Length: 344
Image (cartoon, rainbow, N blue to C red; front, side, top):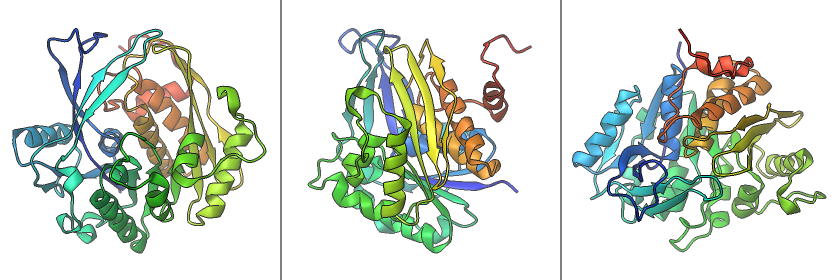
């Protein structure tokens, strides 16, 4: 029987300057849709799991187009809420070589930012669910979004559903009068699996590596062990802490790996050299989607970490927010086939 995963968060209209054009050069924009939890939902649907995305969309043509895009990937949208006036937008300028990519948000007063607890029936939403995923972007959008996210976490906890969180600290989003470390700890307390780097842990949970020098941008594995141990100690429900390891050689060339700590063992994934990045937006979400699939499927923490890392490596080759790859393609890369030869 297929596992069922529920994700909750905001999905936005993404408008990208074509190719490597700067915003000032663009005379048109390419249209995609994306957002942390929606990206995870699409990944899981592509892997053959039952995937249900929960959000609030405006009842207009843009909202309907967004829902249709999700349904194209077999994501269950039957419990979406409708209302508000607009879908949030973000503009993307893709970097190259020494010029970094740039994002401009236009998401104020979006339908999702005005979400209310009465918009959702969590008992019905979590019927038959095995896993619930959210990211730190959701409670950063508005106080009401944070309140509804906590409501969902508590409902999932009451049903014995595994809860995962990508801490995903975005300083520009926390602007409604609360800081991340005032809101997030109560939400993280209800989680079983946490993804985040050392900066996320410090800004969101006020946790820093102990006895390890992390200056100069080079972070040793022991720093991740220290942060992970402190998270597990501070939040007794948390069983696994995961960190993605991105080395930025240039806008087009990154190294990519990850580590997982389960309270006993610290696993490190192989390192991939992604030398010709097509689109890195959604890279962390593709990692999370792969990790969730791996944890639900393999019952092996190290193999799940390897699946997530390989999946997100492949995402860097695909335009748009969504990771449009199959289990076979990910497992092929896990097995060492990175040749890119034509499959006939």
